Amino acid sequence: MTTIVEKYAGSTLGKSFADLLDEFLSQPVDPDASMRINAKVLPQGRYKERAPRTTKPKAIKVSDEAISAVSALVSSEDIFTRPNGDKYHARKWGDHQDVATLRKAREATTNAFSTSVGAPMFTLLYGAPGCGKTALVEAAFGENMYTLLGTGDTEVADLLGGYVQTPSGGFEWVDGDLVKAAEEGAVYFIDEVGLIDPKVLSIIYGLMDGRREIGITANPERGTVKADPNFYVVAATNPNAPGVRLSEALLSRFTVQAEMATDWSLARTLGVPTSMVTVAQNLSKKQVSGEVSWAPQMRELLAFRDISTVFGLSFAVSNLLAASPEIDRPVVADVLSRVFGSDCKPAKI
Image (cartoon, rainbow, N blue to C red; front, side, top):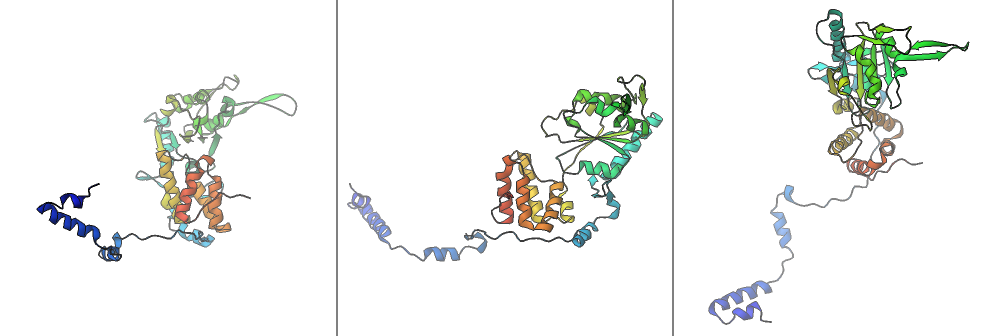
């Protein structure tokens, strides 16, 4: 085979080209060239190999005094006590405070039915489990409230009531919480309203519109119950839960609606480690994009804070991973490992 050097060696032009090519190919390799070039590159542009992180996350101890101190950063006017004694820290709902908004909506509803002026403002809250929906409702209305936890097995009798056998062997009618709330003018909170069969919930329509009454057909003697003007309905649901169904007729009666999400800055204020908040935010973004079906919310973050205080950070990380859905666990483990700098495995005994 004729080489490039031999091909052009016979011509004048080729001779000079051949000499040049021969010099180029025969030049020695400079082992220090890369060092000299690298010295002319700015520090931020150089590649630096990083050693793999093998350190375990250090335990973060959060004392009761520290939690109280950070809680004090929130105005006392924004802290409410729930019936179980837990504290609820109010958040912004547009330009208003969330607790004050719920209470004001109830007042407007009372005025609407008392004066026949204006429209009722029943409220529907939706969002992931653990973001604070139930806590908000309890903080707003305290113990003056009846609660129904909805399931796929909820029946009309769970709302209206039914006949109960007496010690003597007879039967007597006992009102359901919906009827009690309507007559007493209390708040009726339907938690996980989307899991209840829409046919069952249709019985509440008459209490939420201009009729303000409900007929108890199962007990003709009870007849029709009129609602007190102070009667108020508020509901909550996780729209992404399997089996959730909400009829248009019911949705149209909830004129005030809002999505609730976890307040990351509040979580930090309440003593949740910043690294854990970062994990939750990362997983929340992945949940929105469909990479995972679950992300820690305020309930899980506060539990993480308390568990890490008692058992240490490594224990809390493993516990959180064990509590995550199995189908999402590989992604959750990867996010935890990247943030905390070590391989994370679910808790196992």
